[in-house]
Image (cartoon, rainbow, N blue to C red; front, side, top):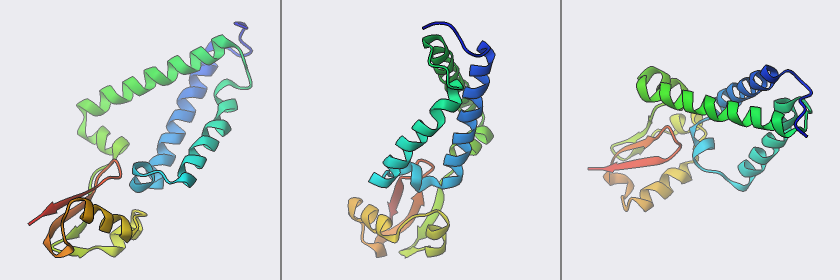
Length: 152
């Protein structure tokens, strides 16, 4: 149960490698993918976790191997949080920045396409903000995928 099939450090390297790979893939998939999950997105996330599981432990099913991977991922997450809290450049790289998707009542359709945002999502955000399109001063797609509306 506690005997490792691999050297202890290999679990840590596997955890770091998969963490970084998934982080890059999530950043490349776009802000809206992260911000609002559809049932399809949830399915993909569940399948991703199943797909990377053997890669994290190298097929080892020991408690010790699993704990090494978990500790590695938690420490890595804390390190990333520490770095991004102290460096704007690192935060921008890891978390992204807000994107202007509309101004003065005009929605920028090309920017929406580039960021994988449906026009209906902007319209929904306008309704939630109780803001008619013509009263919109700015619309931003935030780094977390949320759409923020500022009125005149």
